[in-house]
Image 1: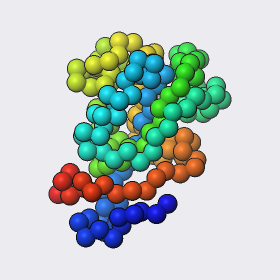
Image 2: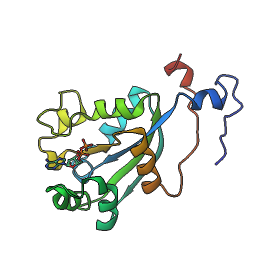
Image 3: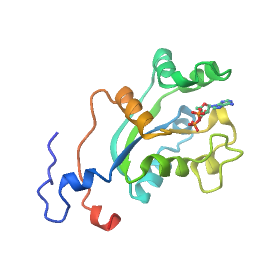
Length: 168
Ligand code: ADP
């Protein structure tokens, strides 16, 4: 995909940009979509300064959800977790920025909403672990795997003109 502003004199060269950039897979779970939290959640990542590089609303099949959560397949809550994820459409996203994996997890909050601090997405909008609104990759390696799984078609390539106002 062509990067329409790659020649802009206001931006560092793409190589020096990319070395600081990291991507995370963020998914608004079916409860977040049903409760109308899509705009609020996207807004929090946008206002932080992260760049939206991929986004789509889709419903996934059981086998796909099982693949996404394969690491948890031995856990007792696995069947309920898979039922939850396939219960309605989700919003799958790729967000980019410096430390977006770790910072994204902080924006999202602890897995159990009882432990999520107010100000985090789960702290503000969720009560139960099985209805905790949002998923975020827990490492750079899981992010690569999850982005490849959810966006096999690839993602858009674009550079924000705000870059010099967000990064020094
Ligand atoms: P996170 O989503 O914070 O990375 P995990 O990867 O450990 O957390 O778990 C994936 C999802 O499985 C959680 O977001 C939550 O919806 C669900 N889950 C995790 N632990 C439990 C549990 N003990 N009981 C019910 N659901 C759980």
